[in-house]
Length: 466
Image 1: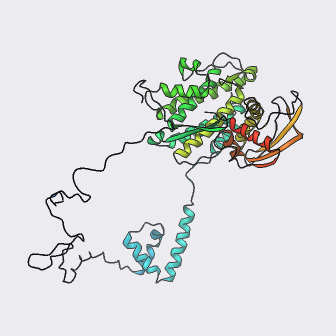
Image 2: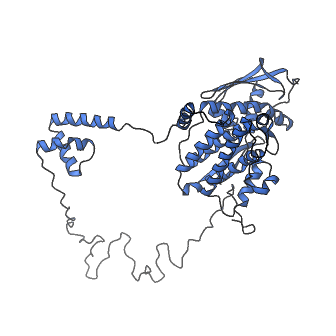
């Protein structure tokens, strides 16, 4: 909390340190004795071994443990008598085997049964069979729901009764990822909303981070999703200040500064309501009905764009972008509260990877203009013509292959002009595109032109932002 602004300032990387204290507490020596030889309690020093000194009559005083120095040790305290073991008949012990297998016996009964099992082979065999039966009644299962459960339930329901206005396929990943994140938020406790989270991305070929909390991350998603909401004619969560904050980072910082106290779990409601409104609105746009802002559907779904300050994305790509960021930050939150979190469904992950692959040529061109490329393009290509290409092979769930033109964003990827080949796991590639893994750390299989490979991996990291 700043004294000048009275506003909430999110965490940054400069953390305060507590001031040190002096060790002295008065004119005493290291053992706490005063100048007159007392120890501060009115007693004089004893021998360093902790025992009393010599009496005036020449006999040694009693030791610190209360026994004469030359006498036998005093007896210790008598042990408390334990409960007498149960003595039960064979028929009673046999009748307790079922309860013993279910761990429902008392401590005394359990001890009596287990002593009996060492002597009676018939009862031991019966006890083993009962224990195996109990294991079949309680198979070990994870308490975490299958991440595909929601999709399978909805698919089953929609197969029986198709929706009157369906959610377009390109909005499915956003719908699914916001629902998964909301389920995670339902499971965390009140104090966990203030758990520290570090947002990470790449900027000018270097890692950048920003420290906030779980609630601060949801406020960030609410602020940036607001760009899609504004494009659809919905209310801006930043109000009138949103028009002056065009970039995702500016909008997030403005939302954080506008809060007099750190964001709390109360931010979940506005974020979830906004995500529901966005999904409803894009469904009408796709169907052809007017959107909330009066924009007609059908053709509008192809020409409606979302402005991010320095660039624009078509509405369909913007929804994939927001789904991707929702998943990435849900993983950040899950790590902060030590909660397991699975990747998106394979078909949704494939769409996200496809968006990043289609954005790579533009990112390569921007890095080249900024002087960050390993070397400038030496093979200019006419727009629409095939050019030098890198084969991006994504392995695992949601994978595939993409040919990335490396000399011009207007060129076409061509297998005949392939100069390099990179193979990456799908989740690892997404972590690279999210700025959570550096190009040097990306576990990539590489073959071909090393400069081209480095440029493409760096361009993937440059796709990340706050």
